[in-house]
Amino acid sequence: MGLFTAGIAVGAILGAAVTLLFAPASGGETRHRIARRVRNVRGEEDVWDELAGELERAAAEVEEDAAREALTT
Image 1: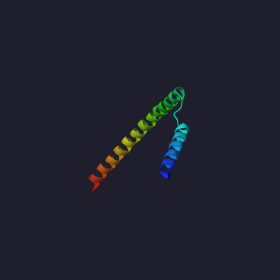
Image 2: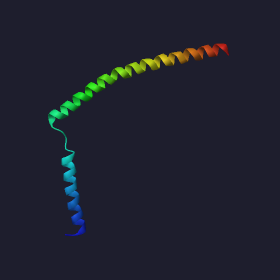
Image 3: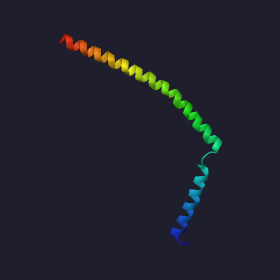
Image 4: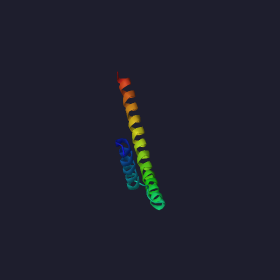
């Protein structure tokens, strides 16, 4: 067996081993993971809405401050 062929064989064996180690979970486990991620995203939606509100308020304050500054100069 040549060196090239041996390399191909070793690569194929290692590839198969890695594939088995990182094989996807069962259907039930995959559905559970998806459901958990959906719940997490829903919780994060509230955080993003709150952050957007804070940014809008901060932008309004900056706009008011700039308008006051423009009137005094």
